[in-house]
Image 1 (cartoon, rainbow, N blue to C red):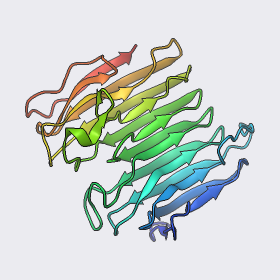
Image 2 (cartoon, one colour):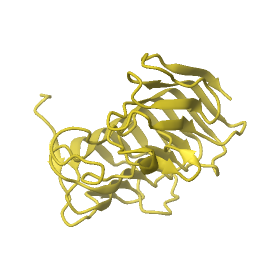
Image 3 (tube, one colour):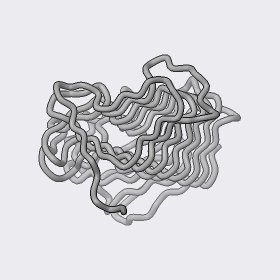
Image 4 (cartoon, one colour):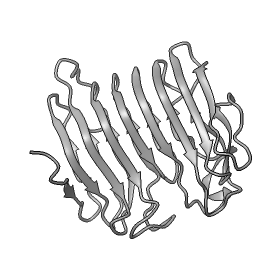
Length: 255
């Protein structure tokens, strides 16, 4: 019998709501984590920092797990989900900083980062990560793979300065760290709807080192009605979005 709702976990006093040791065979599925009013370092953490055990024969899985900061009331977290263990399977995961509901505001439901993957050999399918104040996804582990990624940049950025990343305009929706040598992604998209300041520009939706082992397939960015714009799709590649037409800019294969 299915469809009776999601169990909801809310951390007290800024703790991490769910922590998993660096072990294999753990199944996390079918629940929601809401951030509490005190900032948590993360809402879900798979493996402690420095995890290095091989779990390829019996991986941990995160399936139909939803993470929310704000929306049901004020909430704060530095990260939504942090994956430190190797071989973790991520399947249909929605990691959301609220853009509507209760407790919503650029600083009220502050959450800088959605997903950080530090473990190696982590695949993600059906990955939805939206509205974070800085990077939505950061990938540090080797041999990561993503099949379908959907993203919206934070609607409520008050101005360009609020999302300025050093000399770069905006934080990428999906960033592969410069130390990574092998990574691949298929069917990835990011859109902007900067309805507070429509003049905000993003240099790119996706950021990655240019190496033989890193490839993106069918990446796109789109501006909704001209509320903000992207200059490129991935790094400095891809045509800018422009005007008020909601037409994607697409890169079929990168590099």
